[in-house]
Image (cartoon, rainbow, N blue to C red; front, side, top):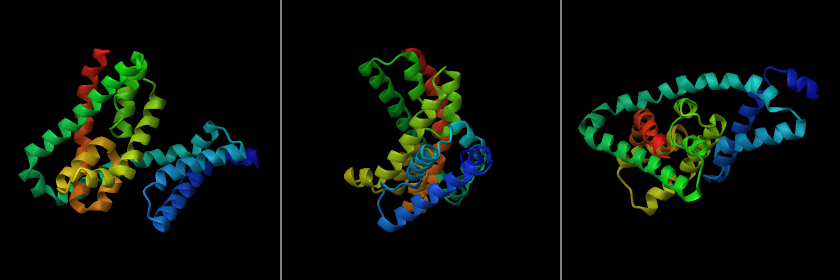
Length: 230
């Protein structure tokens, strides 16, 4: 059985999709943010690899094909933004300033935590891209000589936390403006958070999709500057 699974080009894809479908089912059934489909999928894949004693490389040989869909899926986020183009034009300055503020808060918080916990330079730059989409974050981490695999893990965790807590945080701080919600969610928790923003509303989803791209660009510049501070 182990040899069959290890040599199968589809094993990684099948268990990844199956885990995600289980997550979707649990989320719909219990209507609780803790049952995030991506989180459930990760746990399901980990459990499957341990149970069937399949090494990560064998799993990744099949699962890597799913990553090819990441770029077109991200590009598709431009569609809801196009539908809200007039809203973007009328609030352009506020939107850009909001995204810039979110990126600055992310970079500064990582810098302060690095000082507090005495991170090495490698650990520090590894965490700098934590709030942007995986494709851009991996490139930044590699360019700054960070640990790319940990960067990916941190980005995913950040997104899942944002997805789970987005609505709660908006309620606690009485954030009711759809544009503000979308910008905050997209800037802090990239595509995974944007999935939650789209559930909240069309405007939130569109603004969150915009925030992913702009925050990525700001972080590329900002991370290069902050990397030299420690």
